Image (cartoon, rainbow over all chains, first blue to last red; front, side):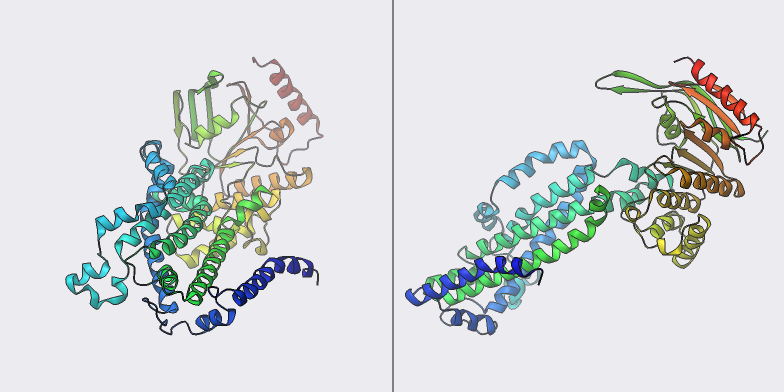
Length: 277
Length: 245
């Protein structure tokens, strides 16, 4: 009962949106009825009618795979580079201008250049060359799209890792050294756990960016699957129930990913908050 | 006379600061700490006590003079404690054991024994340092130092933030434990009475240089209200007052 007023307040805006949606769907031929959108969401693996794309479920899987691959690439490159930037001033000075450019330019702006460089290559091209089409799912993870997700995610990972490492207290490193640890042990037992909270915050920001970038990248012509592709295909043929269903799926997955990462962030940072009192 | 575990010969440490320029934290300091002895250094704030301990721990290098560290392992305990805040108490105690490659099962058993030795209840094992009181944190820090098998403990006013009664108990237990295990202690404090009640050797320090080194031959436990203690206290106070600044 104590939380009832807060729940009521939090429900006002979603209820208003639903009300506007119902009224708008009734009066406009473009806005789909809630029931039509719901039907798409309830049968996510049904092939969409009149659309030149795969099902909603397949689209979700492909978008998530592209994000996972791009984000994975950004983590593999960004965390070691961020650590190097945090430890060494020279590395920081050398990389800072590049990181600033990377953060300032929208990742989508790189897409034409990325397509120019990578063309239609994918992990399947590496595996099978001209027979890449035989590996359908792998072939959809085009390097051009994955690279711009990696580029978009790299900035926050680099900056947060570097800041986290720079703020590791010297006394923690000294403590491990006094206990008998060498350089690797100091890194493993003091630097990495001391910076972990900041690294996870960077990952959370990077995931949010990657999830937004993927949808924009998939809207770009030439992409044949994914949630962004479903939205643009639905727009082309006027089947907006698919576009709305894709938008709701994007929102739900985005919220879910953010909640998971926020939980991880809270867990890695718990001692820092308590220490501050 | 036992072999010195720590020897400072004419050690100076100069820092370059952006605002005050050259700051001489230690000036021509000579000092010896012998095995199994408790050496207490007293002196006002800013006289270079912490710099001296950091040099003794090998965490800093002198600008001039030589330092010989005979101890196989030294541990520095400060007021902040010596615990990593993201590790539970038991994991902190286990860390030096892990660094010595002790098998996991033996690590936990040994850590629990050490926890008991420093008079910490077993249920504290799974707590994080920020969940403990100041006194408990210092006991846990001491447990980590014992697990590291430090032959020399460098204590930088470690019991400063702890209330009076806990502090007396904590100091007594720490020293008893260290004496039992034959550890050498170099304790820095600005509390003359505390130093006098613990020290085998008392060093009075003032603004960068040691001034006197006195062996305290009073028997333990020392009665702070006794005549000999009073006399020794007056002498040290006079030395501190007369020491060149």
